[in-house]
Length: 399
Image (cartoon, rainbow, N blue to C red; front, side, top):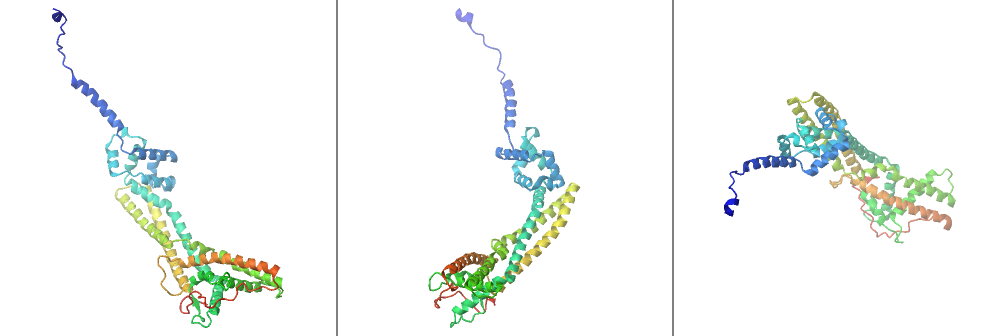
């Protein structure tokens, strides 16, 4: 009875699984679409930060790219834009995905890639934005190299110092096959500090500096009197003349720090960059790009062609002057091609030693005032068996 009275009736309703599934599937699809991102989160974040930093709207950036307006964007933004260029996969995703689902960074990139040849334009505009700065840098560098060559050739004190070294070397090598040299290799200057007198301290460079200082001092003396104090004072003045050589050869020291191979590569890179601009112009003309963009590119090409030709002329002149100066001072020999500015490095290193030795000779000169009745030679008698450099009458500077 109880079973009959309280028996549950079998349900006649069939669960509508299709209804539940139809409700769940759109919701899941909606969530999936919202979570889909074309760009990597890190890249997306960087783009958003960049747009905020430059305080530019998407429309403003796109308009500048369309018109070739380099000045409004600047090299920093253009360089950053070029790094943002989407991969092929990202570009396909940006074109196929619903714009309504994009985040701000994706919206920005989508707007940019809708511009014909957008990143080719950006690359061309970046080249233009840095062109003048790079040309000025190259011109300044070549001017420094040419100035260094002129300074070496025209420096009276440098030539006089070389003459004094040659005379001293011949005196030391009297009676040997090197005792009548007419020239020497320039790198011999760096060996002077290693040639020491019998006291083991004073070097040949000390002797040369003192003798030149005495000569220069006598020239500068108004009254030709030879009291002790006058000779000491005139030598002091002569030392000042010798010490001024470092300042006189300022361009030489600057040129010694340069890498001429890098400068030549930069000239080639700039010249090759014009090819990219010409290709961009050809593409723009073929596909009917904005007239303002074409006008901007053509105007730049006209100016840049002239600038490149001029800087290439500066390059040739600089290289030629370096070769001539090297042959003049070091002789007609094959130098290390990896160090075309080697001559400036030698002189720079020598000037550092010369400054130190000049100060040491000056201190000796000052002590003479107190402790001596005559100005002694700062260079005691040399051991004539001491080898002195590599004097050669056939190569090097003839003096």
